[in-house]
Amino acid sequence: MPTTQTARTPILTLPPDVAERIAAGEVIERPVSVVKELVENAIDADAHEIRVEIRGGGLRLIRVTDDGYGIPEDELERACARHSTSKISSVEDLSHLHTLGFRGEALASIATVSELTLLSRAIETEEMGEEHAAALITFRNGEVTQRARRARLHGTTVTVRDLFYNVPARLKFMRDPRTEGGHITQLMRRFAVGYPGIRFHLTIEERQVLQTSGTGNLATTLAELYHLPLAEMLNALSFRSSEEGGAQSFELNGYIGNRALAQASRQHITLFINGRLVQSRPLQSALEAGYAGLLPKGKHPLLVLRIDLPAEELDANVHPAKTEVKLAREAGVAAAVTKTIRAVLERSPALPEDMQLPGPALVYQRRLHVPYRRGLRVAESAHEYPASPGAAEVLATLRPLAQLQQAVILAEAPDGSLYLIDQHRAHERVIYEHLRRVYTGAGVQPGEQEEQWAESHLLLEPVIVELKRHEAELFEQRLPILRGLGLECERFGGRSFLVRSVPNSAGQEQLVGYLPELARIASEDSNEWQDRLLIGLACRSALRRGRELGIDEQRSLISALASASAPAVCPHGSPILLHYSRTFLVDKFDW
Ligand code: ADP
Ligand code: MG
Image 1 (cartoon, rainbow, N blue to C red):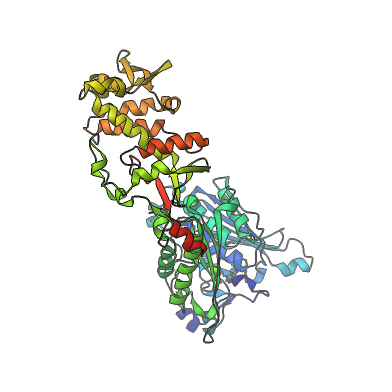
Image 2 (spheres, rainbow, N blue to C red; image 1 turned 90 degrees about the vertical axis):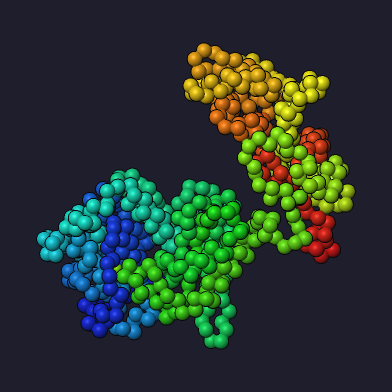
């Protein structure tokens, strides 16, 4: 690890042949680049605690304080000169770096675009018991503008003021302090997970936005950063390569969050190689190949991966900001990354379609491929979905066993196979088909109309819904249709309507809260409104997940589902049933 340098070596100016070998280019592009360089310096100095303070999005002030080994007074000025570093001295050193820094350019670059103050006390002066042994130096316009001494314990405080004051082109692009604050927060979160043994503090515009306790435990650090009890949501990643053909081994360590923690962005993926926060396209692809198909589509995990390999196998000298690296055994490392992530995610709840046949399988899966068709679907009937062999018969024979997580009914089929039934979607399907029958029945078969009109549940307190002017007109025209569905409404003057009743169902109480939403659907100016309203009514009145069901309720839900024309898929097109065949059990248990 880069932090294991024990005795500090003096800061010297690199000889030209070494300086020439260093990837040249702009290091300080924006405030977050300053923070990165200063925090890396603190880590290289063996700090246990690093505090970062930001004002004005980093343009007014960036201050990084550490308790590292400090800089002796007589080296302070040289620390800010170009190509001056204590970390390497020869070309060979470049091929086995043990520190994050090595270019000797960060402080020099910062000094040219800001007012830079260094206050530092070397750890050895403390041992000698000197007082006021911290030295201070300020640079502005490339000149020393202040020298002083202060009292402080060992460590270094670097203060950067008025960043880019002399680079108007840069300033123009830095309008929003919140954007910069966001980048800095992200960076600090990453350092915190890369170095769980260091206490990090970050204050932005006088608000503390991040704090870790430096326990050394990565899971604890993650919980501190995300303010979540993460213990059960994280899966540990670990892999150690075997030493074949004399190649030295490498190690992978870290955590990946489970499905529930998946995010729409890659912001919470952090990759460290030998303690270096890096971006690497090949490894990024390897990571993604690891979770592809195992997390919801388009989602990315909370993931921290630390790769440790022999220093000589990592070339960090390819990019001025040191964010890109080259690996000697890249293909091998990438393959291990993919494999390690997949292995872990495959053990934690996976999507059925990724599992090996013979199951569990989505029942009547082909129905899921029937695209959701916009428009009125009241004509939907069994013949649109070629009946699966014995679909309804199987459901009619299921015996409920129990309820899982108050959301899923477990049921046994006569052949000994297991069915999982999503209770909310099952009920939604049942209500939807019922409402649809009512709807199509109305006016078509007057004889059946009486019994098929949805029964309505009178609300003790009518609900007032307010619509926009053009909505109110359409809504009023549709009042008779709505009444047929059990939604008794009347105009209440202006654009307001009174809802007096809702369709009678187990979920009628919860429906009340959704009346404004449903009224808006019922006044949509499109010819999909009827179907959307039926789906809305079904969804909002269906049993929720989290509702406990007795065995009798489970049985009656299953039998209602058995008489549905499309029992495997909810009106939104999501699966209702999962089937673990007997063959699956025999196969997996090795019976
Ligand atoms: P580099 O990190 O590449 O060596 P820098 O310009 O970032 O170059 O820093 C120059 C030198 O200043 C470092 O080599 C180190 O000796 C010293 N230095 C900078 N920051 C610190 C710090 N926080 N604690 C101790 N020494 C520091
Ligand atoms: Mg540095």
